[in-house]
Each structure stands twice: as structure tokens, then as C-alpha cells.
Image 1 (cartoon, one colour):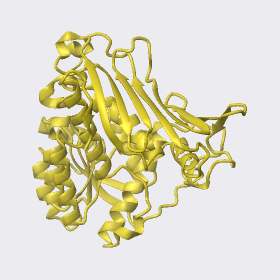
Image 2 (image 1 turned 135 degrees about the vertical axis):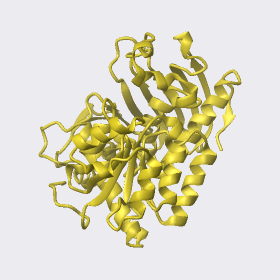
Image 3 (image 1 turned 120 degrees about the vertical axis):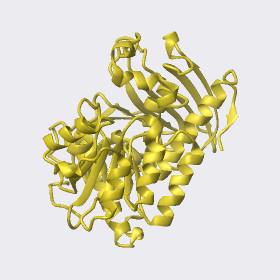
Length: 390
């Protein structure tokens, strides 16, 4: 159980790029990073407007002198300080992730980045190389993977409860963008602009979340080839899609589907992960994240609840309060930030083997998400053909 006892030494001095006033995700980064005192925010470059960013940082209680005009100034100044930041979270539009992450790594600063990590697999592999050479970590905030019941699903697969995995059925299909809402909302507008979002909209923005959850639950599955069709139901979003369906063939014979959409009118999130084996199935729904459906052939269906003693110990390790009480997205993100902190400390101590078995979305997860999107776009833009994955 997580009870506030820190598993590292001193809190990690930490900064942010982006995530300023009006940001959709800045607050959850700050709340998750500081919930268990693993990180101490001491610096930031929060806004393209330096004055606005400085005012926001001051409102957060930071020293105005450490509220920087841009990330370059922050990395230069902080890397020269004996008390400078050791890690940075990047919460900016997609097109900046690679250059900011690279600059941070070259300055000797650990990186926690929003997804997609980069626009291209080549860029992501470059970050991996730099991080390896510098002895640094790159984390990617696939926040849903911090939920306790995702770990339970993974343990059920690992212990053979499901049998041989046959089907992976994934979706993340909300309805909030069923009209051209970006026309009146700048926070959404960049997501449908290729200059800022990259080669996709919902494939990169939504679909990579359940894709990573499937990787956590079924780590031995490898995609052999895929086929993708994507549509722009709001015509002004073309060439970026607001709906897509992807079929995946895995090595060994398993088959997967992933439907992702921003125009599923009336739906809230509708992020679901269903794993079907030869003996049983599990299903997780992010709108009811504290429960996991387990259906064993020939037995009554079961609804497993967070925090209960019948769960695997590895899942119970993520508990923050006794069973029956709901835990939410902030707790899941805090679980991730705890793991990022453990990994950062181990690498700073020159002992990365200390966290060899620690599960967190690192640079490999970032690479895989970018590679998957690239292949989906390649398939869809050739008329929805099957393409080899690697």
C-alpha cells in the first residue's frame, strides 16, 4: 500500500515546460508529481508569453527568478546551478516534444513527456540513444496505466487464468468533438492542425492510451502487421482523422482491433480494454476504473474491486486507501510519478539495475506509440492496406 512514506531520498528538484494558466493537463502533472513528495517544483517555463508565464509561476509560489522566458533559458540556467532541476515535465503541443526533450537530455536533465513523444520513430530512437548515453530516463505520461486494476489484469494474464491470448479488443471513442468545436477553442484547435499535432489526430492523441494498456497487460504480444482506415467526418480537419479503425495481427496468431474516435456522439470517454483468452476474458473501462470484469468460461461473471484481498499483491501495492473507496485519475498519475522518481534516483545513483523490474512507460513505450501511429497512417493513406509492422 502507498501510505505517503517516500521510497526515495530527498525530493527531486523538478521543473515544467508548458502546463501554464488554462492548460488542460498542467495541473494533473503538478498534483501527481507532488502528491507523495517525490518531486519539488522549483522552476518553470510555463507560457510562450514570458510575462504571463512568470505571473503564473509566481502564483504557484515559485521564485520569479526561476520562472523562465523559454525552455532554453531554463535548461541553461538550471544546469549551471548546484541546486538546479534534475527532472522536467513537458506539457506542450506535440510538435515541440522532440526538440524540448532533446535539449533537456543534452543538459543532463531527466524527461517526463506528454505523448506522442515525437513525430517520427527516428526522432524517438534518437532520444533513446541520448538518454542511454547520458544515463537519464525518459518517461511518457500514459496516465491510465497507473490504475491498480490494469496491474491486476496483467497478473491474471501472467498466471495463466486467461489461457492463450486470442483477441485484444480496444477502444477510446468519445463524442466531445462531434462538431467543429476547435473553431471556438484554441486549446483544441492545435490538436487538429498537422503543423502542431503531427500526422494524426485521434490515432496519436487517443488510441495510444489503450494500445499501451494492452502492452502492459499482454507484454509478450508483438504486432506482426496492421491495417487502418481513418476518416475526417469534420471535413476541415482533413488530412487529420477524427475517427479510425485499426486491425492488428500479432505474432503467434492473436488478433486485435482498436476503434478510436472523437465523434462518437453522446459518449463520454468509452475507453475499454478487453482481452480474450482460451479460458477466460477480462475487461476494463476507464469510466469505472476501480473495477475489472473477469469472465471465466462456464462460471458466473465476476466483478473484481480495487483494494480487495483477493487481488494479486502486485496490484494491491498500488492501493492508497482501503477497498470500497473510489480512486481516480490523479491517484493513477501519482503512481506513475512515484515510479518515475524511483527510476530517476536509481539512474542518478549509477544503479539502473535497481529498477530493472519496475514497470513504467519509458522511452520504449514512447517509441512504440510513435511507430504504431506511423504504421497506421502509412496503411490508411494507401487505402487501408495491410502493412508489415517493423
